[in-house]
Length: 255
Image 1 (spheres, rainbow, N blue to C red):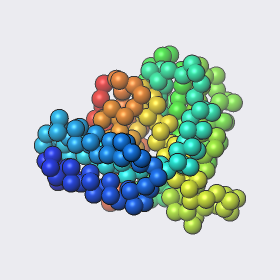
Image 2 (spheres, rainbow, N blue to C red):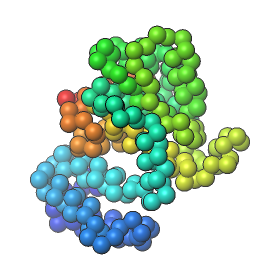
Image 3 (cartoon, one colour):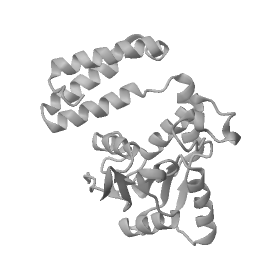
Image 4 (cartoon, rainbow, N blue to C red):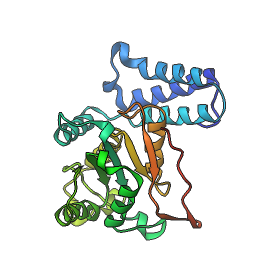
């Protein structure tokens, strides 16, 4: 996608993506809406032009297009959002904190305790102005640690988490713990897309570059997919082990 920067090429790419999607998921594209996403890609890229910005906007658009949920998965995501976010929720006063743990901790990153994440979060953001922390994780231990943290600390904010999350751990469906074998592959996909949707409902984000999922969230934020018109991104201080141990690169903040 990064090499496709001219409008004609983008249009061809978009048509190809559309054809693939129509074959795989035709029921979600009806009538006049059939070409709407393609047109949005072309319109967006033509206003950006060539170069690095075009590269990232193409990738962001392609990610969104390819990962569009079908009707059943969309219903699961909408239910999770409806049950988790109250009518008083304000994205400007919310910070998203996705935490990748589980298999990521075996080799790719030196994972830290949940309490350390919370210490960093409170150092990075003016918590007196934060009312909600939107927490997502594929690791059940992180979600349980949130409960322990709330019990042991006097906090002025509320955690928002998806109580229906599969928390599958590794991304490989075959590695699901025995007590989760009743979940389907669709349930796992719905949990992952729900986490993405949850993180785009905040006005601030606490991310790191050890996880491609966090990078995907950053793409989405940088190209206007979050609920907040002004979105602040700050980094989690964890050490990545990608080939050789190195400190993570600071993510570009869009303020």
